[in-house]
Image (cartoon, rainbow, N blue to C red; front, side, top):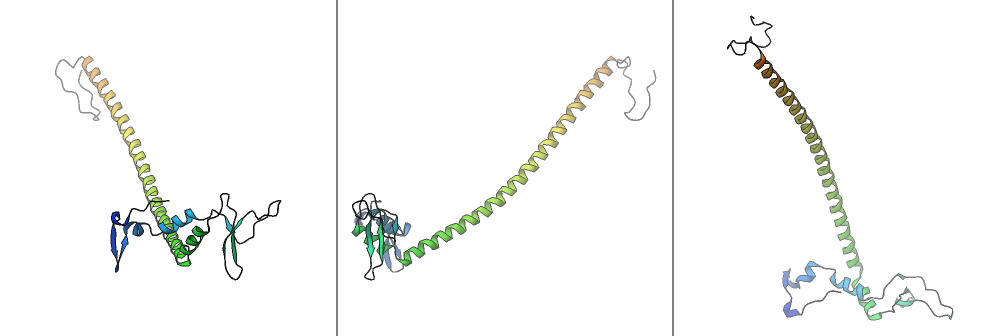
Length: 182
């Protein structure tokens, strides 16, 4: 159960032509929640409860109408008729329909978020695939660069050992097929 601060400590908002307590605006179902917490615990049913071995009813009447329409409960901790009446009054058709409308709106929002999340996930998967391709291409480039560096080192070593290397003679251009005079 929530504690409501004294009226002189509550904040108020102007809604329409009336001032409403901020906590009522932020949680329009607060009073219904509090009444439900004080009411006889359920489950509630229109079926008359069974009787025990001594013939006593194992449940209690929660509400009854002059036309003998009765709601029963089988609470483990007793009944609270005044709290039940408060709850029934607050759980009127308008309040229940408002709760169902809010639930429907939240469910629609959740579905929308699910669709958005699905598109985001699909985009993330696509980006991950592109990243993996780029990483593979980078690894191949690095491997090629390493093999070219190794080949260059071998060429320089071979040139250093060559008898012409010390005479300052130019080598023929690569790929021409010419052989240097010896």
